[in-house]
Amino acid sequence: MKQKKQSKVISISNHKGGVGKTTSAINIGAGLNKLGKKVLLVDLDAQANLSQSFGLKEQPKNIYGALRGDYVLEPITVIHDLDIIPSTRNLRTIEAELSTGAGAEFVLKEIIDPLIGQYDYILLDTPPSLGLLTINAFVASKMALIPLQSEYLALQGLESLLDISSQIKRRLNPTFKIGGIFLTRYDQRKMLNRSIFDSISDSFSTPVFKTKIRENISLAEAPTNELDIFRYEPKSNGAEDYLNLSNEILKLI
Image (cartoon, rainbow, N blue to C red; front, side, top):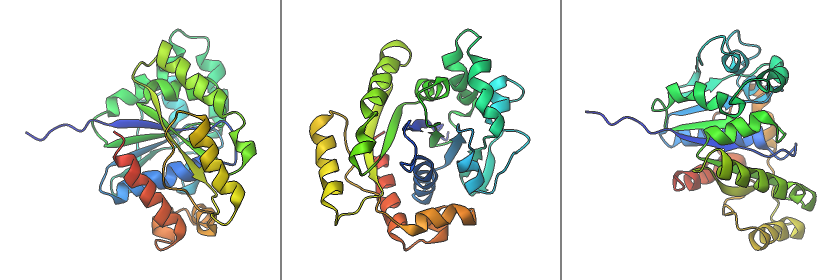
């Protein structure tokens, strides 16, 4: 008998904007897919940038309707073994809608659970906030990965994110953890970028990935062509870095 998959649910999260969160969710998902894994990407951001990066705009069935209980999740296949649950602008109202009900922190977990076993990895692209949707993502996840831009201002707020994750582990999801931090928009030539890596390693107990995502114009261009970095520019620094990061993630869980 073929063994059932045990989906690894991972949040990609940082409440500070401009750190490459959605770019990372897209390309980690595509990287894991390239390494032979079946992957589901879930767009939890009302800006729907992940969905739009694959040409999915205002789909009739999306994460908003599923969270409301209007229908079950229906993944959309982008390429072989890489599926997406798209978002919509309407998602901006979902926190207010969910907050009046009991067990509001568990709604996402409940609607994702039927898909557990169908994928090797389920990646949740969380909104740039520490609100109810992000809490839902952490409750549904085994771990979170934190993209961090290589500058000191990006360190501000990291402690708040780590504190929220500790509360989630203590009160709502005892198996949850921060799997690691990885640096984005990295430039080896800049002393400041190199010192950020050392600062994180010295100041926080959270693991820091060896792979750093270098500044790369192809990463910005790929979404405008509705492609991940591996299909857009497979020989770019961005493709090399996200494949290396994906290999590191494979070793986590």
